[in-house]
Amino acid sequence: MRRCLLSFDVEDWFQVENLRGAIPRESWDDCELRVIQNTARILDLLDCFGRKATFFVLGWVAHKVPGLVKEIAKRGHEVASHGYSHELVYRQSEEAFREDVRRAKWLLEDLIGDSVVGYRAPSFSLTDRGLRILWEEGYRYDSSVFPSSLHDRYFRPREVESALHSGVGRTHDGLVEILVPTLDVGPLRIPWGGGGYFRAVPYGVYRWGVNRILGQRGVFLFYLHPWEIDAEQPRVRGLSWSLRQRHYLGLANTYGKVARLIADYPWEPVSAVVSAPGA
Image 1 (cartoon, rainbow, N blue to C red):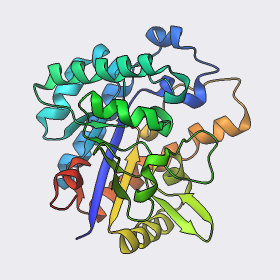
Image 2 (cartoon, one colour; image 1 turned 90 degrees about the horizontal axis):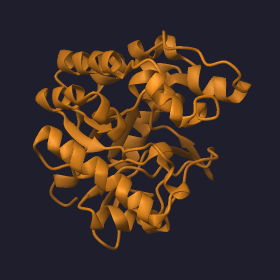
Image 3 (cartoon, one colour; image 1 turned 180 degrees about the vertical axis):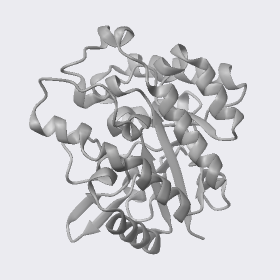
């Protein structure tokens, strides 16, 4: 059976790693919050097509707008953790990472009154030690590994090598890992899971890649951020050409493209593949 897994990383426009040099963490409280309206548009779109998804919610956002987390759960979607502070995992000490994922998990569980078992690291920066800590802190699956050969920030733990061909695997502890997919062309692993790559590629080409990955592995996971459907978000000055392209490319067309994608496939929350027989 083919599984199409839909996910959204709930963070706001000013928390993106590409903008960190221009918007320091200390200024987040002064930035315009747009995550509520953008996430609401996604929730309405999912309702329109009768689809369910996983929302990896940043703890900082959950603290600021707890009603948004409750609304996600109320509409029948899975709430999972994106950590609390949006700090790259490999920049944190073991103790700091443990506190970050623990704090986010407790906060989200308190808001929705249910267990939070899934995690995704900021900028797919999870490490081998991070996988172990997630298991110890009560998480049961992770979706932080993006084995692309074309990015300078992603990290690939050795523990998940077994999942590279199937898209789903387990660590030695038992944590389920659901990879963000790549389109493999010879030795190249072209990123094909969503985000800026989805914004950059014409929809017909992207859909062809989705079908190819589904045919090869039987599992396709898609991700997007709410700010990626927001063409009216504030423009940050002083960015390099590369960072401007990464953040702003294709924003005006993303909502229409993701609406087509949601309509075209039978999407499920990420946890569906974890709880499936034989997962």
